[in-house]
Image (cartoon, rainbow, N blue to C red):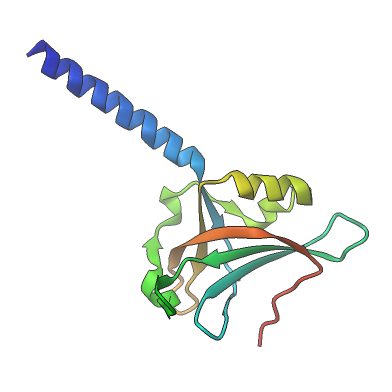
Length: 147
């Protein structure tokens, strides 16, 4: 009986510790005006473009892939992969918060995160949707053209 109680206590402490670590590892980025683009096969891409602090460049582009691959050359649409969320329940950062980092600091910050999610606002009903993304690196003077 004592062993069972001890195991239950130990398991619950482990779960609480794991949930704390998970909260620190995951990053939620709120981008109410975010734009997703795709290539000809259907792979989805997301770009954060910010004014560069480096005087040699105008913009810094932080590239992400939305992991929408289902199989060999088969991709899910953006609508199929999102999850509706409430901002009240998430600890998120806005794009303006990320602008406080230098370009190298932000690159390192994004590279070290195990899970990154971008949150977009649905223009039709003002709901918020979360999408898993993979940070793929930084480019200088790259901007996403909205057509």
